[in-house]
Image (cartoon, rainbow, N blue to C red; front, side, top):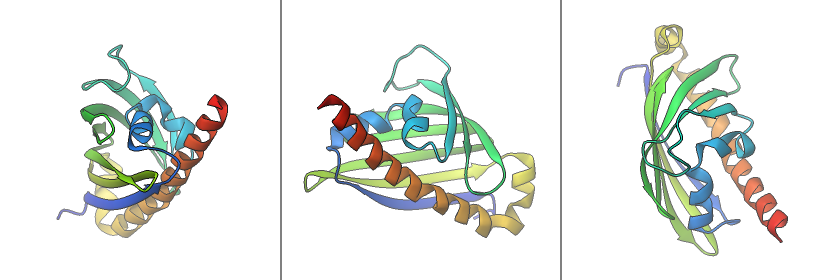
Length: 161
């Protein structure tokens, strides 16, 4: 595998939401800064296709623990309500992010697969040397996403109660 190509497989357990409730959050790119704000600093829609619509696109700006930001486009590629969210990314990195949702007790199990190729020239150049640091940076972001999604669902339910 080239040093600028990564694949990450992770699982989240979200007891605070049903598969449909989790899907409604994961399928709406505009919500990313609200629940994964440690990483997603800004998301701006690029079209008027609407939320949770295949082909809808948004511009995102994200940052992990390392001192650089990534800029990219998120495009909804596959959406199956309550079951699947797949998005393509294009920009500083190209990739495919896949979230498969299934019931788990009263909550949701989310199986995540993230395949990405780093394209930003300086990061691609440094990838052979910094590959372990880039992987560590990704692993820094993931638990923040899981915790943020859980918090967001709790807050959403408390607001509607």
